[in-house]
Amino acid sequence: MKVFLKKGKEKKVKHFYPWVFRDEVEKIEGEGIVAELYDSEGNFLALGTYSPYSRIAFRVLSYEREEVNEEFFKRRLRESELLRRDIPSNAYRLAFSESDLLSGLIIDRYGDAFVIQVRSYPMEILKEKVLKTLVEEFNPAFVYERSDFKGRREEGLKEFKGLLYGKLENPLIIEEREFKFLVDVVEGLKTGFYLDQRDNREYVRNLVKEGDRVLDLFCYSGGFSVYCANRGAKVVGVDINKRAVELARENAKLNSVKADFVLGNAFDFIQESKEEWDLIIADPPAIAKTKKEKESILWAIWKLAYYSFQKLKKGGSLFICSCTYQISSEEMIRQVRLASTDVKRRIIIKSLNLQPIDHPYLPTFPESLYLKCLHAIVID
Ligand SMILES: C[S@@+](CC[C@H](N)C(=O)[O-])C[C@H]1O[C@@H](n2cnc3c(N)ncnc32)[C@H](O)[C@@H]1O
Image 1 (tube, rainbow, N blue to C red):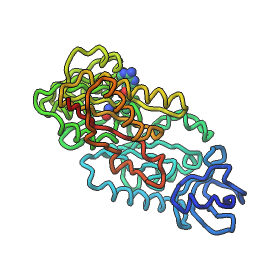
Image 2: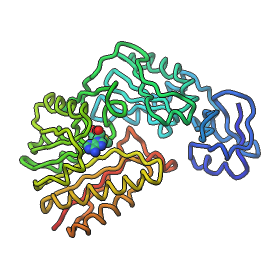
Image 3: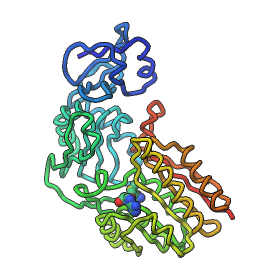
Image 4: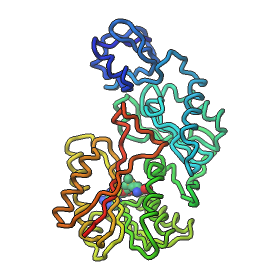
């Protein structure tokens, strides 16, 4: 199958942007889901997948002509593994879609178990090959699919979750640095665990000392809380999801640390808190597909920063995150700055942390940069 671009539309692809939108396509020759991409003069540009229903018509899988077979997936996953060899955990994102030239596919590794997410129609067709590759290369205990998200509809696919291979063990236990965490791959959020906060958990642990009061807002399964409690901090975690709070409590036990977990609304909790905190972590959920959703996330960042700056001790830290591509680092800094001036406290921004190596950020594909965490210190 061949996809030809309209005149002038080849520049993006030559600059390694991996998507071609439907209105950029001049004509299509042949049928299928694997296609070669050509410019309007007939020069080969890339190999990739063709989506018949989506706004994104073509996704790059390679800049060479090659067969998209099991050997192809083996090569890609070996390259992926190489990039991730220094990760201090047996759990990591093995394939991050476009960032690993596997557009439409996410694979999270939890020890000898794998959870996949299929995000495009052609990748759904290629799923059997991916599964066979995983089985042959990694001899997994099981492979589970978590494709239960609404975005699949744009690709003409239904939401799906279920076991694809092996014997399911759920929840399972992963190891990260000296910690162990329970991961619920069936009912948990995302594919079960926030792998993308691994480096930030270590960063935040290094901010606290024995006896510090730490508030972990939107704590999910307690990753930040466990790390801070391990330093001897007195930690309170808050989450609105019952299963999250259960997992957080079990994770504290599993690591022999003490932390209190509260089932409740983080916005109410911070607003009503009468305590003075040394560190407040705020990692709210973020979906910003529409302008209105984006506005509400910006408002949430301001609100969380506003109340945090009221309740932090002098010298205390706010570690606040946003996990959507649509909110830029500049916008986050602006919201935090506005909150500090509204509270009339001076702050410095110590650090802006991005996602870790197993969620690679391609500068040629801005959509791949989604996680931004700001560390602000209240100086007076
Ligand atoms: C991005 S995740 C947090 C991940 C967590 N920091 C970690 O590293 O594992 C967002 C969490 O916020 C929770 N949540 C959503 N709305 C909430 C609210 N209003 N109050 C408290 N928790 C909320 C969700 O249940 C989810 O666990």
